[in-house]
Image (cartoon, rainbow, N blue to C red; front, side, top):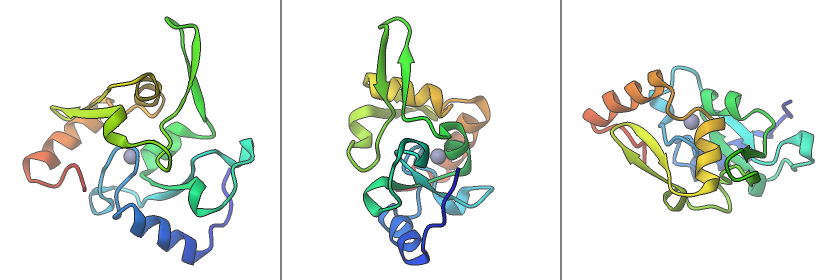
Length: 138
Ligand SMILES: [Zn+2]
C-alpha cells in the first residue's frame, strides 16, 4: 500500500539518507530501479506519512519488507521488530562480511531474513561494487 509523499518530504528523506538505501546501504546510482520512500511502520499499521516514519529504500528491500513491522524467531519463540532506520543504528545491528550483511542482534536477524539481504544475486552485486569502492554507498 502506498500513499502520495509530497515532493518536499521525498527530497528530505532522500537527502537525509545520502541517496542510500537505509536497509542494505546500496547507493541509488547503483540501483537498477529507482529507490522508494518506505513507511517504516506501514500505513496498514497506522504509520504516519511524516519524516520520522519514512526511510529511503531500494526496491528489493522495499518489496521484501512490504507491510511487515516485525517477525518471529522460532528458536526463541519470540517476535522482534524489524530494523527501524530512525530509531536504530545500522552498525549496532549489522556488519558487513564479504558482501554479506551479518546480524549482530535479534532485530538484525529478523531483518536480514525478511528483507532477504543475503540473496545470492544481492551478495554478488555488493562484492562487485565493494571492489570498485562503491559499496557501502555511505
Ligand atoms: Zn536496500
